[in-house]
Image (cartoon, rainbow, N blue to C red; front, side):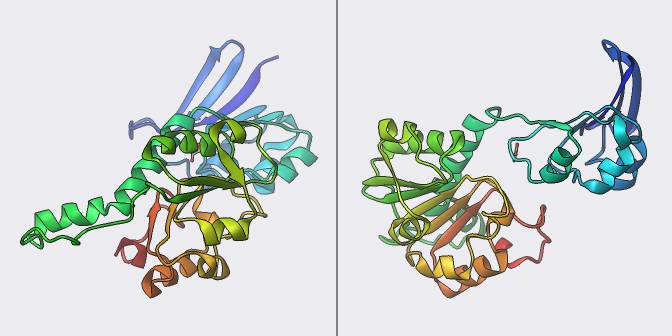
Length: 282
Ligand SMILES: O=CC(=O)O
C-alpha cells in the first residue's frame, strides 16, 4: 500500500516551503513543510487530508479539527519533541490513532540549559554583562551583583523524570545541602542520587532554588500561581525549562515585581516569543 505522510519540519530554505516527494521513504509519499517558520494552520489542514501519518513539531496543535480533516486514514501522529501538550491525546486515543514522541533526545541538553539558567540567574550574569557594557559598572564594591550560591542550599525539582534526575546529578558538585523533588510517584533512582521526595507545598517553602521539569498537563497547568509564589522564600529563584503554561505568568510578574521571590530564569514562556513590551523582559 502506498502510505501518505505529512512531515511538518522547519528548515531555513524560504524558497521551497512545501515539498512533495514520492517514494522517498520506501513506499511512502511524503509531503513536508520546510519553512520558513512553523507550518501555517490552513496549510496543515489542507495537506493532512487522507494522510496515513503525521510527523509534527511542538508548534503544531493537533486537535479534533486536524484529526477530522485527516479522516479515517490517519494511523499515527508522531512529534519531534519530549513534551506532547500540543497533541490532544484524548481525541487521538479515542480514534485509535497511535502516538509517538522523542523522549531522551534532549535530556542532557535541557539539564545543561537548566544549570546554565540557574547559575546565570543567581549569579546575575546577564545584569552584570549589561552593566559592563553600559558603563553602570563604576568600581568594585563588596556586595554589588552578589547573588545566592548553591553551596548549602536546598534545591527543589518539580518533575523527577529523566531531565529532573540529570539536573540533580549535575547539581551535586556544587555541594547543595539537600535535593528534594516533587513527582507523582516515588522514583527508584532518587535514592542513588540522594534526592528526597516531598509534597509540593514542602518543596515550595523549603527550596532556595526550584527547577521545573514536569510535563504540561491539566494537573500541572499553572501550578506555579499566586498561592504557590506566596509559599516560596523571598530569596528563591525559579528556573523553568519545561513549558510556559506550568506557570501563571501574570502571577510570576507580580511575584517578581513585589519581591515575593528573588528571580526567575526562563527557557519557556507564554506566548513564545514574548511580545517585546512584556514586563518579563525588564
Ligand atoms: O521543548 C522541547 C521538547 O518538548 O522537545
